[in-house]
Length: 258
Image 1 (cartoon, rainbow, N blue to C red):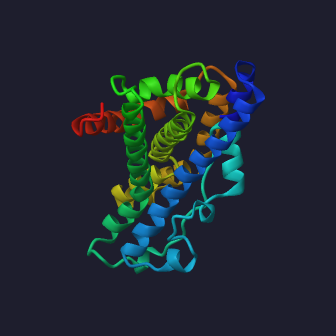
Image 2 (image 1 turned 90 degrees about the horizontal axis):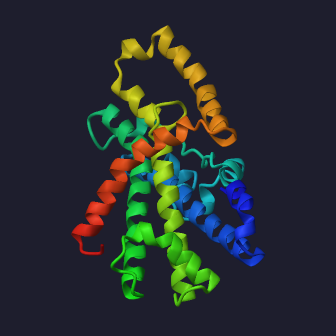
């Protein structure tokens, strides 16, 4: 994130770095905000008005940002949004309480997938209109953006800005999707795993120990990835992201944008 940008700061002017930081903030805010909004909206749709009473059923991203989590994400690539509080006992649209809890847990990553897909479509459309339509959007976007901002190519400045923001929304959304699907508490993937396991397993001492120590394992993986060349977390996230990327590329190709 910002640390990597500053490390490579010699490649850019001060103006370019400031512009990139602003656009990065916009993309992060939208990616986090939509993730948490989907949790809140799904719980509300399933019958629990707790998120609505707390002001969380809104597309205003500022309602969903956690200051500490946002700063950490910007600095080291690890962070979080403000968790959506809901009461599982109020979920009543379907008979299965377990199904509805899983739906709430998966709503955030589903939102990130939708957002990444929309960002890809916008990039593809902009590049098609401005003459880059024969190149795969996510392959050409980094050059396209840099060329437009730096003035090294005849790329409309506004188009380059739009592509830059959409490129980061795509990247951040898929990263949030992958990170949250890791089955370690307190991530969404863990809550889904918890619902799928039997009561006997979730009440066992071994599972309780897992819940107790897993957050420390997660933190250790984050630290290891940021301060060494042994980045297990990024490898895991890359594997989880791959099916989502393939689906988005196939869907974008099916509607004729790539």
